[in-house]
Every structure is written in C-alpha cells, then in structure tokens.
Image (cartoon, rainbow, N blue to C red; front, top):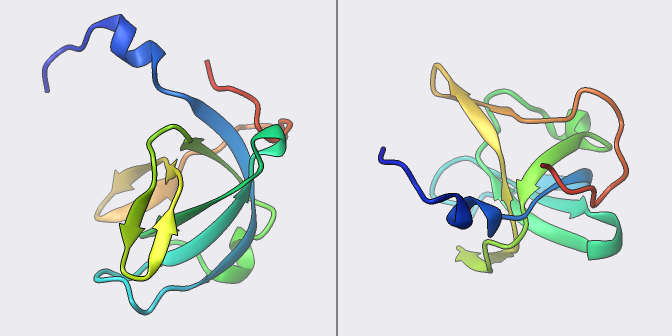
Length: 110
C-alpha cells in the first residue's frame, strides 16, 4: 500500500461503541452477524461483521469495539450497514479491535 496524505486520515471518524444486539445474518454471502452498536451521542448504528469464526452471539452483547462511523451506508443483502467495525486478520479469522478499558460510547479514537 502507498502512503496517504495526513489530511485524508483526519477525515476518518473512528469511535468507540458497545454492541447492544447481534443476530445471525443468513442472507449474507459469507458468514456474518448483524450488529446494532450504541455510539452514545451519535446514536445506534448497524453493521454487518464477518466474525462468526471467533465470536458467538452471546459473547458480543455489551462488548466494546472500534468502528469507522463516517464511511456511509452500504447495502449488504437486505441489510443496511452504517459503520465499519474494525478488526485484524489472524489466520483467516477476524479479531475485533477493542479498547483496553471501558470508555464512554461515542468517544473519538485519536
């Protein structure tokens, strides 16, 4: 990958949110969950996440994550995703990025 200008990075809005609901997403092409994430003052946003290999639905509720919230809406099957949950790839399994300690929902990641 090439370098980007810092001004491009400054336009990205990364925030802390808490997953308040997760459910199966059988209509997705690849195994995924539908997530509802509370971003405090920004409200609740939806996201589709291909994290079924490492996470069970029961373990996702109340989990804090990091997401890109100004990526725009994206239609995935019959679901509209409002944000992009961040994760790292480990042996074809996504590991969610999360704060080390509890942080207020909506807090901007610097």
